[in-house]
Amino acid sequence: MSDTDLGTMDAGQLRLCFESGVASPLEATRAALERIDRFNGVVNAYVVIDREGAEAAAKASTRRWREGRPLSHLDGVPVSLKDLTESRGLPARKGSLTESAAPCERDSPPARMLREAGAVILGKTNTPEFGWKAITDNRIFGATANPWHTGLTPGGSSGGAAVAAALNMGVLHQGGDSGGSIRIPASFCGVFGFKPTFGWVPEWPRSKEASLSHLGPLTRTVPDAARMLNVMGRYDYRDPYALRGQPQDWGEELGEGVEGMRIAFSPTLGYARVEPEVIECVRRAARRLEELGAEVEEIDPGFESPIRIFNTLWFTASLAVYREHGERQRRLLDPGLVADAKRAERLSALDMFYALKERARLTERLEHFNQRYHLVMTPSVAVRPFPLNRDVPPDAGMRDWEEWAPFSYPFNLSQQPAASVPCGFTPCGLPVGFQLAGGKHDDTRVLRVSNAYLTAFPPSFPDALDLARGDSAG
Image 1 (tube, rainbow, N blue to C red):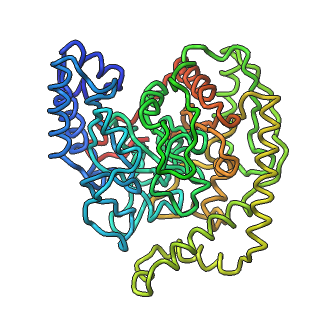
Image 2 (image 1 turned 120 degrees about the vertical axis):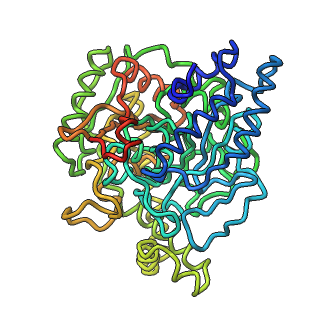
């Protein structure tokens, strides 16, 4: 078996190789590192690559498999962590010139759980500074490029993880999502991304706006996402918001199909402006779900745009970041983050009180809606991927990323599970994803329908040969 074969396998296939002795974790890790060597210079997905640590972990895993005592089904599987996530022995620069390059002394919950399961941590993936926006560039590591067209953004803030997933530079990739930061890059890169119910994947240290932040996987397949959640989707006491009650097996419903699923299809949520090419692609996916046996009704949930609610919380978090830095460090911060912080200075305590009150009403509205429909289906993002180093599409008349990503942050406000599922391409060859959101704790249902769709309509991935030559795909 060649390294190239191993480099394209999912976690389930690798486990079978390890069990049978056809291939070892060390060979799989070297195949993943070889893919990073081939592609990362073009796309800049990884900002830290831990070759020595990965090889050492892979050798230990190889010994365990040979002795018939693997730590878990993920033992020896290559994974990545977002650069906002602390991992012992690796720096966490968080995309910021203000953060230390010294190795972290502790593991965050995802890093600890993956390490204890024997997964091989390859390194850290790129993010905008402190994850503040929905594209992936920063002043320390530069921009991450979309693997389908390297002149375009992959989205963000988990853009490095999404690109690594699209190119299989490692198999499982951890992201974070406070307003769409898993689902947006998943859509722009043509991979699967899942934001679990708030509190089911523990996070520590917590992000500045802790009540919005969800951690989850970006992968090529839904079963791989479930495999990753079976490890890191467990309680950790260090997270003050952590909840118990996670599924014993996050993939328990994956084979059940969509028969009887009532899906509310809302192309605009009643207020969003969406590019026609995106709408058409998602509408086709809705018809396909009907063909698979789901009951799909085009209907809006019936709430106004919650952008003001979200921005009250989001801008205030930026202000907290800004004020925690001294004057010299403030000059190193992303000007966009600083601009958001300045806008928050005009907000009052009463503004925050009403934002939280309206957030509760939105959550109530969505939870009631989910009593009539199992899932809500929308586009994942309202626009196609646009040029690098821009916060908004050119000539769009927009100021904030929330304007072109109106579908994702409502489900952070409600803390409900939501996924981005790849569903095809625009006429010019750029990926499009649709979003599936469920009621709180309906995570396995979201995964089930996502898997049924992708099993029936398998996604395509970027042409690795073109990318290795430095060509732009698409």
